[in-house]
Length: 301
Image 1 (spheres, rainbow, N blue to C red):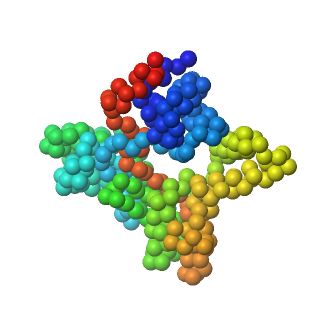
Image 2: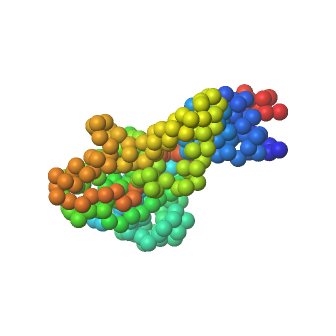
Image 3: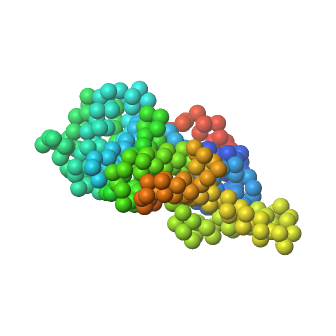
């Protein structure tokens, strides 16, 4: 049996909203596998939410930047909210974002040996100097780079950010770009996981169908209606995780797909969402919380 730690129990509790003992038992049953434990809790009807991301705990900024037909979304972390809002840190974020676009680096590790834009200094040396000046540890955690017709959006001072790539024959049309901005807002607010139904991996759909089937069985529904109930819940699943099937946040009488089609028709343009990346600051990073560990340590023994 896996050794389940208090931190793992808290992480699962924060993700699902379930009780500590239920989370502990699920982790034990799953031999410490968090995703499997989430599935177990859902099948038992205990989980209030089963989000993939871990509890948000790190500070910093999610930055989007578009220059011409190249754009990036990056997460740069620091230790405190005070630092994240400081002019020195925000200047660093802008410098790093421009360097990512100007360099050929495809990962934070590769970026370290690149020259800072407009300088002969490497990113690694630049960060080292800034850490000494600012007085906090600073990490370039992750970034993604795209080329094409791009629209970026940052929310709540960089707590959330989304970069969207459109496929369109009118890349300079103001209304087409405004449509892209609204799509970016939609993704940021409602956290779409996939563009459309066809983009959902087969294993994800199979897992969701298995979960919903077991829930319907536990509810004691007759066999002749159980299948229809599961089908209805899968449609709801698509509406939650697929961008084009979500209700448009500015007009819930239409889906996002219908909204995009309406703009395309009005502008005489072809518009579709080709790709997107959404970051939430600190997702999956957990700060040390000794008080909680002390509180539940006795329950893990």
